[in-house]
Image (tube, rainbow, N blue to C red; front, side):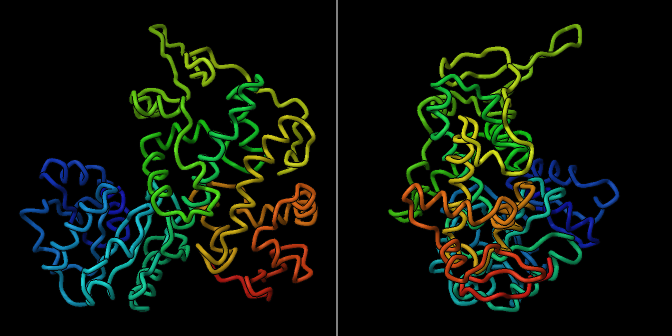
Length: 412
């Protein structure tokens, strides 16, 4: 990740110092920068070259997701950086208040979270999170640089667990692992589950298991651990923060995903050049040949499967519909408005539409009516919508605010 951030900054014409634990690691990171921009990147180590940070404007930490290790590095950085330099962490979910606690007034004013999504050279999302003491000009400077030279889409998040993208997206995946179990037990294949939780609801075609293979179960476990430690007792995500049994056993034996040659799926290459695909069957916990998904009766219109009275439709309603309900209950906790959440999910997770955009597409009225028929409480933003007498979250160039007013959509 650090090399990727260095690469996009160098591509924007900025000189970069790339520091790592060893010279070899730093040079390897520099080698991943485009050859045309590599002359702008100077490699070094934390021990030998940390003093060089006194010369830079923006210091980005992108080390291991461990609070204690990050804080030790920040203490060293604070001792050498100059007044007015900006310090940010690329953490995917550790609260800024924990990173900056006890670090002093100067550090508190100059620090923020700048969460690039991986790989930063390709992903548009740039989550920007201020702390309680972060100076407004720090956020303004970072936003201008991200949207200008770096060409990113800035999403303004709050200092809450896993911010916006991972809070919503990882809830959907972690909950899905649990909620899919009865469907697997009834004979629905993982291939079918992935297909239902893909294009029919506006998610990438990888589906749930395929996306987890890309991310890695180890990374998702870190996300889940952070959620388990930081979510409130009444948060629905708490029930899903830990893996089910079969997935936990996969993690324990290092069956993490593509990075280890296979997770929920794998490709077998043969000497004659042919290849076969296999699926790790979660019911038998054995590998088997991959099968074609069964999408018979799944409608093609975006989101319509949520209202189909079939096992496919019920799966979509429980997993993806649950994700929409969860997102609708997180304003203003994780973001002040629906726009930032929609952008985070489109830019960071490649959703075809953000959750509130999709609710507009499928029809908020029937979504609300089904929630009420099931005896569930209405999520916060859906209650705002009902109270405002509206049937969409977006109207022309305006969006429905948490106060029930219509406000201009900010420029992306």
